[in-house]
Length: 132
Image (tube, rainbow, N blue to C red; front, side, top):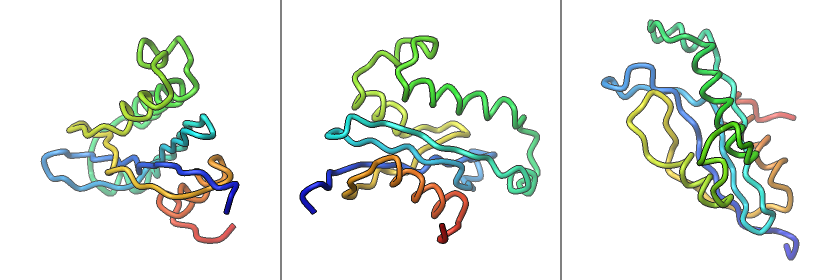
């Protein structure tokens, strides 16, 4: 238990028609202050997207999410936000939005491996796969 550190995460949701408030999970963003880690993992299930009967462009959505990856990495090509402190980058990405890509409220836990935790949460809440 001594090696465990706190982490926070938010589920990334796709809300194809904001006015209907229906969504499905497409990713996870996770932050650990002590491990100096912020990471994001995402995958848009195209059949779920099509089930909503909308005309959103999958490539555009994926490009938007790739910018989240660049912000997490601190890549200067992602603009000013990518140069914020790691905690501020997480807070900005996990902030409440009224756009088609939104984040859940943040949740917390303990881990000794933030990258593994990110993968496990992604499997459970996005891929809905409880097995490894």
